[in-house]
Length: 196
Length: 119
Image (cartoon, rainbow over the protein chains, first blue to last red):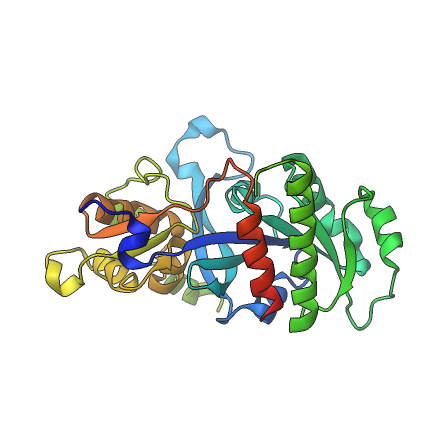
């Protein structure tokens, strides 16, 4: 009677991809362009010490704030669901990134050439964690179009990290970014010699 | 939405009141994308807290923890604690995400790749 959960009620497996980048770069737009549902939002409560106050001063000095987390879903097949998570835009919520990155297949770093430095933290984070990522350069209408190699140079990316131009609003463009990511992850996994 | 109106944004019940003040102590490793499904309907169970009733209702079909939280509009950590209670009471079962410590298998990666291509 103690049959596996998945056999019993057709419970699928779930995997995730993280979409990171600076505030306002188009992460939720990208998630929404391919998600089968409009991007959903949930909130995580965070208790943080008020700035400049000694921790020992007691609970009154802490306040609770919320971090919004936007995500979308793609049903790959009846047994597999892919979730796409946008990272919180504010850098101080790093601990949320840990949970988002844990077990992720890979990540998309969305870059805006008008403020390239806003994606430095994301690039650093995934490099340090060894999580495979691609860089999508979101082509805003009023932004000067840099070449991918210029962006690679500015971000000091390793040669093997794919960089491509994209339009976060466009479904086919986002699909191409995700396909590039998956191919990159598969190439890395093969190199690592994991059994198929 | 400024000034005097702002407090209406706050929940009328402090969030962790519904978990009895418990936070991270007992969430049996539930992850954002752990899939859960109810084994019973709220009507079959009867005496549940309102939040648990809503959570049980939300997972009548397989659904991820993060989607439950979005649907019942409660903070993620609160939902994890309450879901853990429901799992302990065998009202909900769960399936963990692919092991976080292992690299994803080529089989899973290929399936995701094919799925995205076919969108």
